[in-house]
Image 1 (cartoon, rainbow, N blue to C red):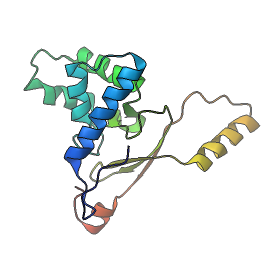
Image 2: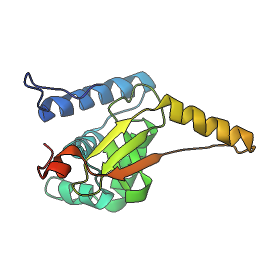
Image 3: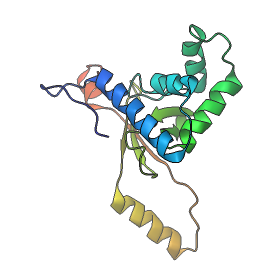
Length: 163
């Protein structure tokens, strides 16, 4: 799923969220899983911005609508979303970000703005191949890899907040 754009190249975030939720419905249907109201709401909270969100921030945002939501409920919901490939966990931030391509299971690399928290997922096949070659050369078995690259987004470099 490509991020939705308006005619002038600006990001259309409402369309972006709608695309993410539609993709989630499709992924869950094809896997025989249920996208319950709570799971849908948590996914929508994760997609509210293109920055990472922590579990307790999700719990706080749910508080106004679902007073009964507790930390274990949020963590179970996030685990489901991870298992379905709908979100990624950013290890260094202990936070979650929506996956723009949930239909195909994959490992990703992430650019993370250390000032505003903006996150962009990308896939670098050559980087994956280099890691696989190095691991094979030393007899190392890779189980999981998440590459997180920190720096400043274009907007923070120029002093403007990303939209």
